[in-house]
Length: 476
Image (cartoon, rainbow, N blue to C red; front, side, top):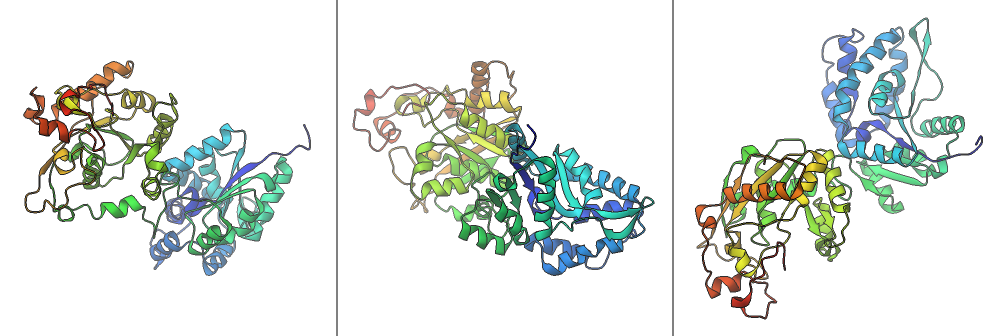
C-alpha cells in the first residue's frame, strides 16, 4: 500500500563487507583499463595497509573528497569496466558470514543496500554480484560521457551518508528509524545512531569505545558471531600461535597426515572420543595446518560461568542434545557455508566401561547428516593415548608427568567416501575410517583389567566397574 514503510539493512563496504580496503583492487583495475599510470604510486601500499588496520581518518577522507576533481575527464564507460573487473575479484573476498547475513535479511523481507563513500560506478557491479537490492554511493558529475570534476548529489560520508540514506529511504518507502546498519567507522556514527539496529563491524578504535558505551553489538564477518578480535586476531588464532610441543611437556605428540586437512574451504573434522583432552589435541593438529576449527559442544559447557564465554570466543557451536532440533546442524552448516572447519565427535561422549575397549566404534549420524546438508568433505582424525594423559576418572589432566610423558598418537586421514543418501551407512563408513587410523592394538578385542575399567568411568561413578557394560553410543 502506498505510503507504508518498512525497514532495510545498510552495509558499509571497506572493512565491513570486505575485511580490508577495496582501494588496491580498484586501483589495479583502473590501471588495467588505462585510466591510471601502470606503475606503483610511492607509498600507496603503505596507505592501504594503514587503512586496513586503523580504518578511516579525516585526512584520508579529505583526499577521497578530492577524487572527483582528480578523475575529471575520465571516460565513464572505462570506470564502469574497471568496476566490473574489480567485482569479479572482490565478490570472492566478501566473507561467508557477511553473505549469510545478507541472505538472512532478504529472506526476512528486508532490502539490503550498500552505503559507501566509494564511487558509484566502481562499486555498483560488486553490489550486483552480491545480489544486493541497491547502492547508495558517491556519484561523480558526467558531461558527454566523461567525469566533469564535480560530485553529483551527496558526498556519501559522515552526515552526508545519513542524508543520502534518508533521501533513498523516502523514495523507496523505507523507515530508517527501524532499519539496520553495519559499519566499521566512527565517521558513520550519524547513520548508526539513526537506526534501531546498529552493529559495529570490525570497528576502528574509536567506534569500538562508542559501541561498548552504547552497548551496540560488535561483529566480525570473517569469524562466527560472538568471536571477538584483538588487533585483528581472533582468540583461537592467538592460542594456535602457542601450539608448539614445548608448551606441552607432560605429553608427547605424534602427528601424521596433516596434509589431508584442506588449507581453506569447508571441512567436517571427525574424531574418535577417548578423553576430555581430545578437543585440545584436534585443535593442535588443526594449528599445524594453520586453520581454526569450530567445535560442536554441549549446551551445559556454553552455560557454564567463564568456560562458556571462552568456548564462545573460540567459535564453539552450541548443541542441545536430546532436543530433537536440527538447529545445531543448521548452525554448523552455516559455518561450513562460510568456509569454516567444523569439528564433531560422532560418538557423542566418551564410551565408558567395557564399551571403551570395543574395537568397533559406534557413532551417531550428526556428521553424516551435516555432510549431506553441506556437501563438505569429512576428514577423519584417529586419536590414541589421550586417555593416558587425562583418563575419564580424573578431574584434571596429569600435567606433572613431565619425566614420563605418555605419547598421544594423532593420525589424519583422507576424506571419507560417502554416498550422502543414507545417514546410517555413511556413519558406519565414518567410524570405519576412524578405526583404520588407529594402531593395531585398537582393533584387538580383549578383556580390560579392573584398573582399566575404573579409569574409563566418570569420577562420580559409584557402581561396580566390572558390571559396567553400557555399549550405547554416547552413553554417559
